[in-house]
Amino acid sequence: MTRLSDQYGAINLSQGMPDFDPPSQLIEAAVEAMRHGSNQYSVTWGEKDLRDAISKKVKEYNGIDADPEKNITVTCGSTEAVASAVLGLTDPGDRIVVTDPFYENYVPDAIIAGAELLYVPFLGRDLKLDEEGLKRAMEKHPKLIILNTPNNPTGRVMNQDQLKLIADLCEEEGTTAIVDEIYEHILYEGREHISLASVSNMHERTVTVSGASKTYSVTGWRVGWATAEATLTDAIRKVHDYLSICAPHPFQEALVTALNFPRTYYDKLAEMYDKKRRQVLKSLDEAYIECHRPEGAYYILANAPEEYKDGEDFAKHLLKDIGVAVLPAAALYHDKELGKRKIRLAFCKKDTTLQDVGRRLKKLSAKSKQKVAPKA
Image (cartoon, rainbow, N blue to C red):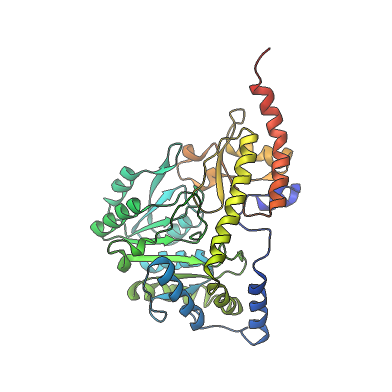
């Protein structure tokens, strides 16, 4: 969709990458790191200064005690952290639980590992996790469960009760959890981010994944990290070493600066994205497009109006005739029936970009008004 967006000159809301720059002090820190020699391989599992900063951050924000030498691995983005964990912690034939829909890389990770996938859907108008379906899946003794909270693409944030249920099921079945928390600072309407590793006895059986891409608007820097107890970390590091050797060295050095930003940075980040969220929700409402209100992350799932065959048909119309590129959300669903009428929009864009999106969507709203106008 990004390639098609370029081809048609559309505004690209299909991919979760900002069209604005990261904080200027972060760019300067990266330049200084390059100028001062941080241009070769780093320690495979991450520069010590960065691991120290991550250890402090996960203690203060996530409630996780992590030894920077034994429990933290710096990777090429959170995507590689999840892949390394899946490959390092499973054998062919093991079962892995994922939600439906899912971030696009989880399923290929499991396929590459030779694992059997078990899907648990988000259901209904509120996109609630199917807890009974989760219980049935966990009864099959999966080796892993992969979670994402705040969630891409649903925007759902798992609460204490849901996490406690998952923790209890993992303990009963001997399942290890990989929790992708890359959107951990992007929360709305008073939602709170809770790390599964801080719930019950999950510290010993959880791999907590996060990274720099979303929090600091550096999706191209490819620096993430996995936090886990020593045995899990050893397995992750072995795979990580052969996948990528190390994350980009100068960006690791620069991110020490980012992880020392004051709390106000994260408050302003959430406020900024909430403003963008409300702006796009308003534009969708004015265009008579039904959508799901996200609690976190920076995506909105919306439904194709009834006059379109499905989400893909609607996405093609938006691309070619309206000039807005979105993702047909069926691509993120195992059960295509659940996702066939949905599209996903990423609102991590400049306010001016989103204002332009609103103007373009008014072409849709004009047609919709004609259809719903009362007869004389």
